[in-house]
Amino acid sequence: VTPAPQPGNERPRVFRLKEDRAVVNFVGLPSEGAEVVAARLKSTEKTCVVGANVTKNAISKDAVADHARVVKALDGAVDFVVVNASCPNVKGGVVDVKAMAALVEVARKNTSVPVLLKVSPDLDERQRRTVANTALRLKLDGLVVANTTSRRPHRDSSPPLFKTPLLSPDVPDRGGLSGPPLVENTRAIVHDFYRKTKGRVPIVGVGGVSSADDAYALIRAGASLVQLYTALVYHGPGLGCEIRDGLVERARRD
Image (cartoon, rainbow, N blue to C red; front, side, top):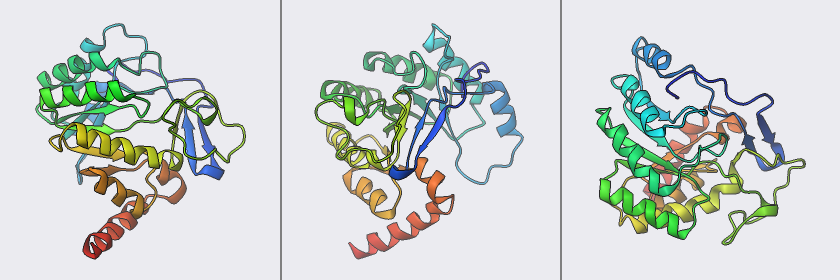
């Protein structure tokens, strides 16, 4: 959700990597704007927990003011807010780690619900340390670990994010890649953030989860919650229930 309406990037902007069960998106955060979204949510009976992923408008030069506006508009309409400081699909979408605290603080001042921070899987060791220290200092309500990656196997960095090559041909070079190719890296960085925050900050593990085994591995690595998105494209909405039941079995087993 952005403060003002914006159309996002030109189509086509979503690409399936079928052989990898992955997706590359260059959607660009299309949104009808915070006021429209808030009105729709307030007029709809809620039957589950609803969160809002918020960010600035693509052409905005004042990220702090934008976050204040969008969060204030959504107050009373959602149960939690995620400050998306790590979108690789728009200019300025990936926020410098030193600037993240200001976005979280202004969001907190303008809402009565928990505020979480979504980070990139492309952060290096020093950047992850900075984010972890910020989360502890602000007593953050949670970290969402992690967003899509702008990296590709042919231009990976060290340590490598991709453990194996992608199988799909014609992988778009721009946009955020998500799905199973990220899952091993997700487990590693979830555990890294759990260690760095000493288990004091709830972590939402996200990135490549497509089975109960994947979800359980993230929980064992330190995640308090697990999020799905790409897997729903390939497996449908029933996957959530399958994973829930599988987690029950694994918890009883262990």
